[in-house]
Length: 156
Image (spheres, rainbow, N blue to C red):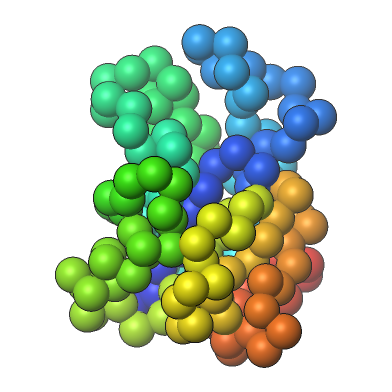
């Protein structure tokens, strides 16, 4: 793993206006937003997806999880791993994941909420706050190069 995208789902690959539904009736995933993600990762030279979303707690055989996997696969994407965090401490989950995987050289985080990310400078600088992936904005006033490039690839 050289480059990793820590991916939230709700608010990134869908929004409140998303019409599609999961098999269990929750907000579904927009195909166009998955394509934007796939194109941005491709422009970065490829990378792995680490699920940081609450979707990570679903059993891998759960219909909604399989739905997510199938949506990503349609664009050639797959989930490589997931973070482990509790009580909505996603920043801590990303920090601990990076400590366990020193081979990760570059990363960005796509999320629609700030959680505790701001407590970790290196992580905060790589956070893109979204309202749908196409509306990604820097969380930090001084974003890392990875965040700048990834946002540019999303907008292109």
